Image (cartoon, rainbow, N blue to C red; front, side, top):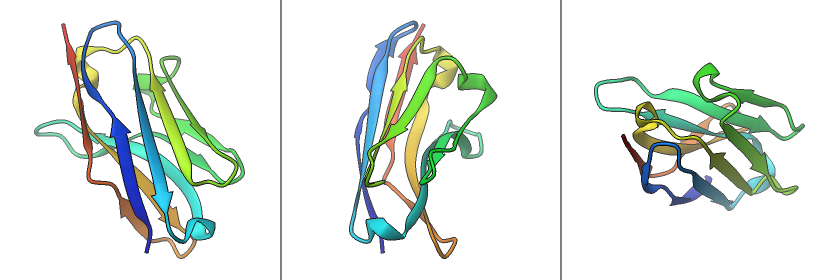
Length: 116
């Protein structure tokens, strides 16, 4: 079992920045990748950015050049730095951890609202 604790998020004007933090507690050695997904009302949950234990990173095309994901060496904490935010970035952002047995764990979600 992996428990994920998220922090950050909130309300910001377009062009502003926010930082999301996610910390995994328990069984961190079993995590092979972590990332952030988001879900806007009426939309499916989509990948924003992910990073694996080897340092490989993936970004959604819509956030490339604006968002940066990073992790600590223990693969216990990831950070998503979000710059140049747009109203279309408004969504609930969920932290994800992928277990080595291909099981996904999710955080409770944190709201990001970007006003125009």
